[in-house]
Length: 215
Image (tube, rainbow, N blue to C red):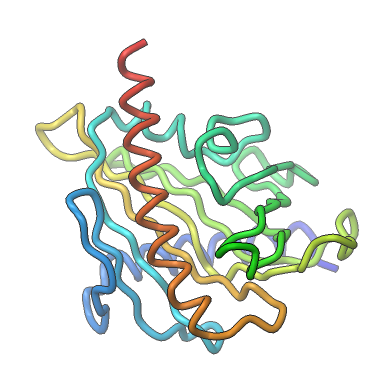
């Protein structure tokens, strides 16, 4: 059981953590590369798995890109992100901090069963225009483990949208996934799932931002 100060502290630590991942170039190994995205990984210092980093440039203003990514119920992300089946806010802690539950569908041809995740989520804006969404797992009395879902645990993860100087219609998007999927999954399934699902995430994001632009 966490209190509000503790949630706030955890959320702020995650935001610092993601900035350090973005700024620290050392130790990343590229595992997937396309025109849209470079996905790399390194061993996590948070749990016995990997932290994955995606980086790519999306054709669209930061406002449009963020509109597609922002963590809100009934937001656009549930519509286009294959890995988000449902997103709900369990408790609003402060204007920019909430406790959220995310439900993911089965994946990897059914080898990965549906999961749910309970996280504290912080949306942070920086002076240079950068906007980030930062999340990590918490325990919340409003969401005990439910039948039909394996409870997974996100370690510091999220996305950072960075404006590109002189290019108002392009946005650099960093994503960080660092997830303990829970359950007894073979390591090889997990290691192949994240790079391919992150590549799909970028290609779907690019498509939805483009369609958004054409309206």
